[in-house]
Length: 248
Image 1 (tube, rainbow, N blue to C red):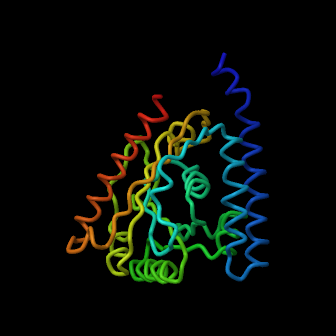
Image 2: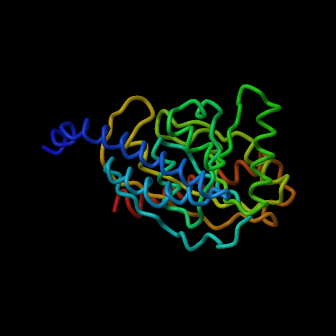
């Protein structure tokens, strides 16, 4: 009965999700125009679009240990990438208004790309190493100027639910700019909305924050060693979220 009910609701969820995203993106563009600091546009996305689209898709989000995140800025958030809904999960769950780093191709996506440009998000051209490095450098400057920036160091969504190997750009960013790292683990998003197709299965999703990994903690580590430390931490956070919420 539950499977049948979800199947019947699937087209409704998809249509409502698209409508909510168009409205949210339009508010983001408007906020970006009205506020030269771009906070208003990001606020619309984090506080209206994100929780609304999660509700529409049936993602029952539980956030753990948000109090671990310092309220001062100057950190980079690093999170595993399971699904398209990772973006609203992170945006809604984080205590700061987050700026995202996305692939260059997103600029061309109607509404979403427009909203990202209007709210001063950061794009990376992964086909050009020099331009990708410039984008990472720009992210570092934004963080130093007070923005909270999030990256998905695995670079793309998982295809099997497991955390992919991490790319090194995020860790060069942290090391080169002496940034504290806020690790975040998402679990359950892959089951709600897998990366291929539009198979939506409402369910529980956990977002778990780890203790900051400070520049003093990783001092002397190479980007590869720091990558392994952060990845291990995120794997542990996901397991904690699984025990506390998915399997509770």
